[in-house]
Length: 217
Image 1: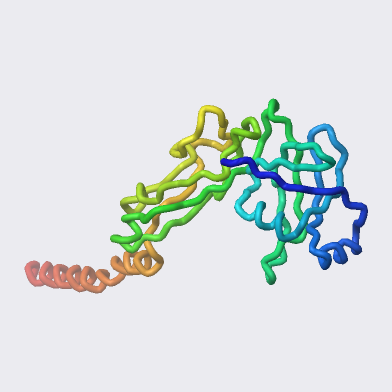
Image 2 (image 1 turned 135 degrees about the vertical axis):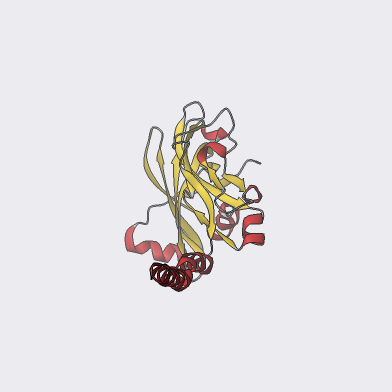
């Protein structure tokens, strides 16, 4: 991935007064982490929103502050979900020579034959994996191919995820990521089938009993 640079400047305005900064087109944020005290910053709202749009919590960015560049992870993006705009961003300064732990999201792609041909539904388990790696080796996301789910009952587990040898997955190998089950109406039909056959079985049993009595007479 290309180097992502976020230009920032120090912020002295805090608390409720931050709203005035947003009206001026500024995006507030904070730097914390590796050998630094928490540092309030602000960025150009339009430019920072454009740059940060595609970054995840495990994405590495370069923060340019006071003419210096520092590597950081985009730890949290607070949004106004009505307007779809960023309200605040937390950056964690990291060392490129020290491993860290991070959550990496899982993204299902592709079409499952079990869903397409057998009316199955995909039930998801884990939506992210916890990993340990050098910051520059962290994947932005794990893309999982749903086309391997061919029949009802097929599943994808942590052990099935292809991971670089530079990344250690901390979740248990047998934890489920996704599994295909029958759709609800199919489950109800299967459950109802034995009940539908019971009157026939009862009638057959009654008939056999009557025939037995006649034979005795």
